[in-house]
Length: 126
Image (cartoon, rainbow, N blue to C red; front, top):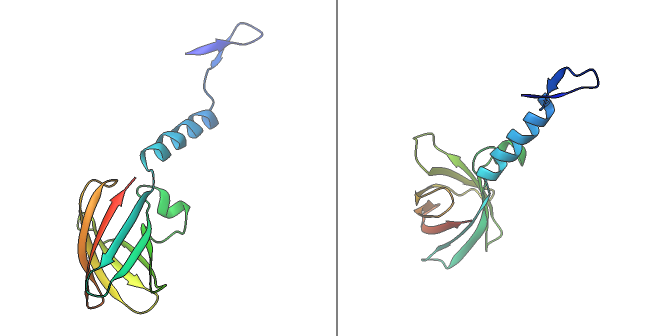
């Protein structure tokens, strides 16, 4: 497809940059960040943060797909373990580590796991 130029010759309708912009918009529309909230029932600590699916980790902080802060003010980050599911290896700046596995979809899921010695439950919603 093309559009005629001043000499009547067909020029491509979309330039390479227009195609790249369209692709970026399409990809970003499919990768909307989700809100993550959770709690450690034994201690009452609550958590709030964001899950960045798709291209977002490379665009935002170059490292973590899941980032949340506990009511203890600990910053926690995690990436999928690569097992082909929604299991995240978590590391917090207060030294705690653990794993959380979400079931559902990337934008609406529930998760359970451990953080340090505590059991945690989380939800992920758009």
